[in-house]
Image (cartoon, rainbow, N blue to C red; front, side):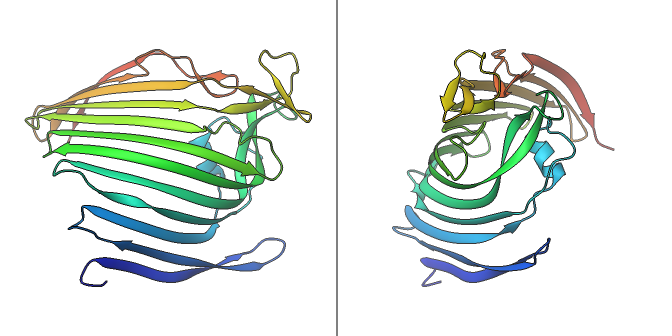
Length: 272
């Protein structure tokens, strides 16, 4: 660092992919940021890459409806980020930036019509360049109130597919927390996504689009809201109430799989 104003890191990552053919990859890792006006503004830039193992277990965390005999490939990624972060006041901070990531063996999910008649998903791979623009604004007043708002825009360039199946082109998140005397704590989480498309194989589906023989349909706008409350009776006992998807939206995160409607849960936790 330079007088604690300029911070930087430089290195590399050597990855060896052992399959039918063993290959070695050397990726750069570099980060730099500079503090202006006592951290009021901090421009930053980074570049990083590596080979990441994609496992069945990690895929099921994304899509629990995939079939069990999928083909697994390692993800090769090189990405660059740059932006500006800082503080607008003692309680408010911001971060705006852009990222470009080139991904080889990027996993996409499509309805499987060979082994499961469409009621499970298969994994296909493509080389995908993802460009994203993101802006976030955070407000925090001690430990009492915290609010975060995030908006991200995505652009996908694919080698072999017309769309990045089931992925949004725009996503917004609003999160809030209110702590009342460290006894009663409320959490609010709102998510909105749009621009997602699914690949389909039945030409009779409404709103279908044909892109050079590849059929797809829009999945509409995803709107999801969750609200939870926790009452801490003492250090060992607490009670909670969760309201998930309180707007009761039956959106489809995956084609032909509408999510559950309104869900309500009451419970208690104990520590011994």
